[in-house]
Image 1 (cartoon, rainbow, N blue to C red):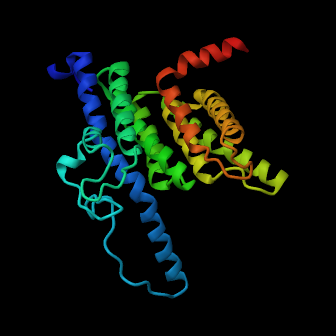
Image 2 (spheres, rainbow, N blue to C red):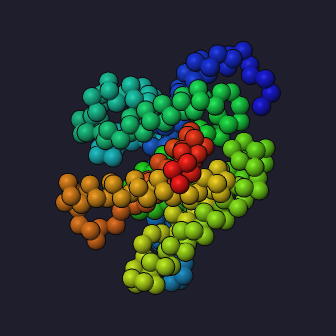
Length: 286
């Protein structure tokens, strides 16, 4: 980007403004997390009906923009004052103003995480394309994490544009050179694809979904192939630690599927901010 405007010249002010933007986008991410899987389910039902030659009854319009936000318990329309990120939830004490039913604490948590990470990205990278790309990546990883936790799905409508966005940012060498980014995208997909088929041929079971391949491909497009070993190592370690804890502490059955996307997203976040020093440390240990 050209020279920073005066309002962005101060790193702390730029971080503060970016944090506010992150809070606002975090509010929209809650809409994406809740509605996108339902929209996908609707589309699948329509396509299946078309293949069977059936016609489904006409349904109410449903998208990311329509209808307006409502309480899922009583249908109360959320007003602008009830939709201020984090503050509204605190003011309402986590309950709907109409029916007093609890509102999930995940809503303000998503908003707060988005705001804090965007502020840190702005402070870490400074004004420029790197900060803009980091915020875009953060928003996508937050949405993918929550959707995968809820549904065990990583939507193509997020992972594939994220992959292309990484390549476009790296046309200018923002996070990696384009050559490394292209190889990273291909290697990221193929590495987990090979693991998937090796596990399936050995056990007869599916160990992960195709969305995981696409997410790692996207991370490879953003950071280049050099970051893939670190990303795979970190995500595997995080997955193993959390998985063992859930089995031992929460008594979760070993046959219950555990989404891998959140661990890939967490590893991608670590790679975004500290990938190079972590890679140097890792290589030094070897």
